[in-house]
Image 1 (cartoon, rainbow, N blue to C red):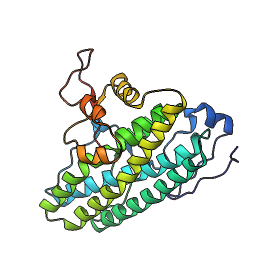
Image 2: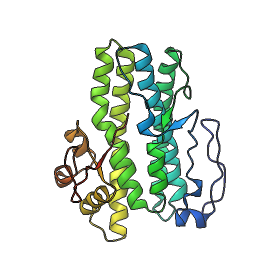
Image 3: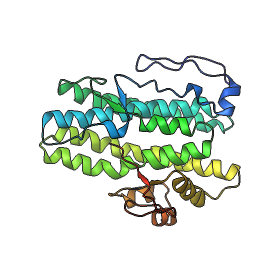
Image 4: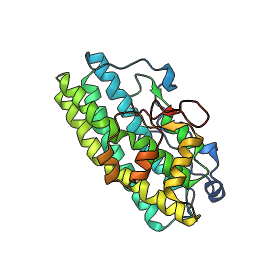
Length: 261
């Protein structure tokens, strides 16, 4: 049993760990983002971001900083919340948190060169909303946070870097490329622990992943980086059968899209 303690306050915001009972039950009461600096808006309320102006590029960087901030807390929350796991689980996700802090600092440092501080602009709560909705189940958390939302970064990272490069911002492009490379091992860890969690409860990983996407009406939007997804553990069956943008589900409705920025 882990003792109750304060988590690292890397953004100056601490939160008390729940009791072991709450961690086992996956209570959602504590899944409040420690990265909610500034305003937090839903995705549909956020203005579009453009690369053709300094303000537009700053907005993209701010959105990326917000994602990296939330990624730190998501990794720490996984360690805190799910304790019926092998010892290596905690070490893996603490390592991810360290990487995500580094990514955040890279982006925040570049953002400050634009005269903008993290928290000056609104940030969407998509990642943390998913954390709340998967707090009760390790299978769902690993399927829908690392393997769905965070995997989206493998898709959008290269074109985002190209867009920065095309606007003459080579420094921001280089940061995005470095982050994208380092995100692959994170998604691979999510894949590994997703498959472990499925094996513990007798679930087929591919069918479970596809079922969760269908149940939540989630799908992949282009571009889909098939090569990167294969490298981190996605099967060809998953990549072929996963709902895609423009396809209607069995209920005739269009599913929702994972958009990392």
